[in-house]
Image 1 (tube, helix red, strand yellow):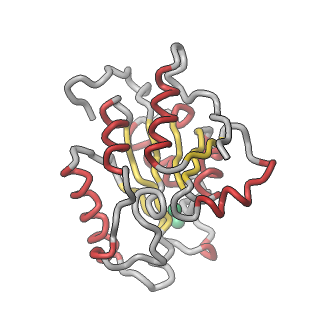
Image 2: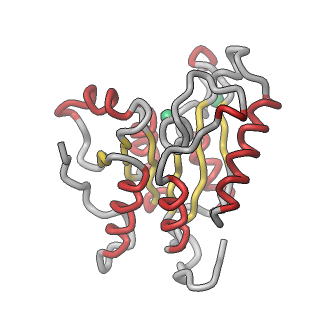
Length: 209
Ligand SMILES: [Mg+2]
Ligand SMILES: [Zn+2]
């Protein structure tokens, strides 16, 4: 992933954002199985484009237990992801990959978030230093994934984000940031990249309630 005008991040130094899908990129839709019902949240394309323009690597990490539950087929999931990929591509945004856990909670797999399997797979595929990465999502599992792999967690208030925020309470780790939406996440991440000597994730933002 290189492009004109991108910062020349050294090998292994490129910052990465691992993005949740439902409620973060697209409108939360209970076990979405119809590609035609896929709808991006406002500001998502510009947020991703701004991150990519700074040389930030982007990958999606998503739990899709609808597969295990028989509510969606692999072919439907592929069609949804083709639509998503094409939309992003039209905006000049290239995802490194869409990493999917197809299992249900009872499967006790190593890849259903907050288990770190998918993030570790992405890290192997792309040489990602997870200690320099962010995980952005709308559920506690996204934040717990961040903690599990030593990344920073960003909770968006879209999707289930507001409900998740209410459950965090005072026990929220300091490296979990809460923002309004993906645009806010991009702002926080880009601001952290601008701190001299801290091209790694910066300090958590104050909670803006
Ligand atoms: Mg989600
Ligand atoms: Zn799994």
